[in-house]
Length: 168
Image 1 (cartoon, rainbow, N blue to C red):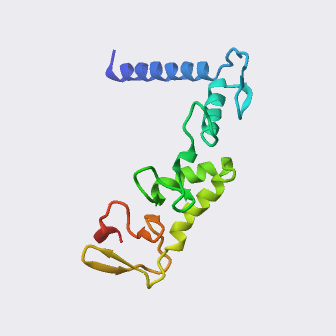
Image 2 (image 1 turned 60 degrees about the vertical axis):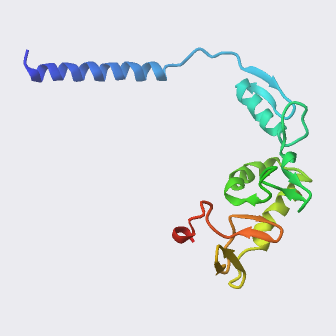
């Protein structure tokens, strides 16, 4: 048998195997009865595990005896959210994604807490006059520049890793 025929047969075997696998994957499967789920916030039939996880996620936006919830991020210092118990500020890069995902689920007073936390950035954004001291330097914050983290009367107008010389 020549090398050419061997390669041709190998290709045929591979193509045949892939075709059988694709056909098997696309073949109708036995339909199982949909599972029911009845949670505190979500209920329905289908993927019960998925519905359970959705319900747990939603429960984290309300008082719950089993799960921690977002109210633990509240601080009376500005009647809003804080990044955590030891950070003392609201960080944009850590809160943007969770904020975006949480908006459809938030109810009062959590909406107000979020608004007050977000206002910390906008209230202290650069205006071309505001300054920030970094080491021995006093830098003027460009007009419109938001900040990396903020608390009342405190902000960091720099990129998070602190390498101001290459980022800001």
